[in-house]
Image (tube, rainbow, N blue to C red; front, side):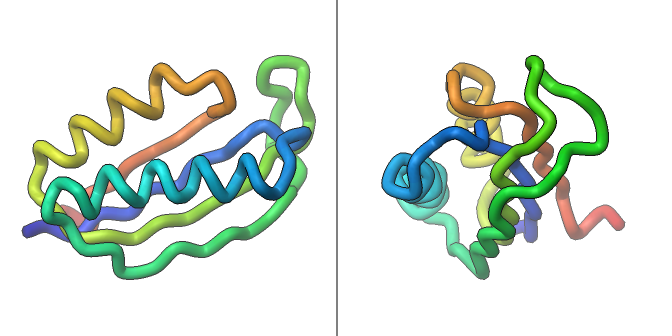
Length: 96
């Protein structure tokens, strides 16, 4: 298994319950793929460095996990089709 870090930004107008559902959904992809969640840090609403989809704020979440590359491909696929996702990036920590 490899170490990964995933930072994603959700739309700021989402309610706390909807944000938690998204966090749980992405966490479940990792655990269902026999991965291991190391940590999930909810940073909350922060100002974006630049405007994205007419928004100036976003809800930031940082997730560290261990998994096989297939899990990362599935996580990437699901995040790309999510309507509430503004931006995301998955980094392989082992290649630093």
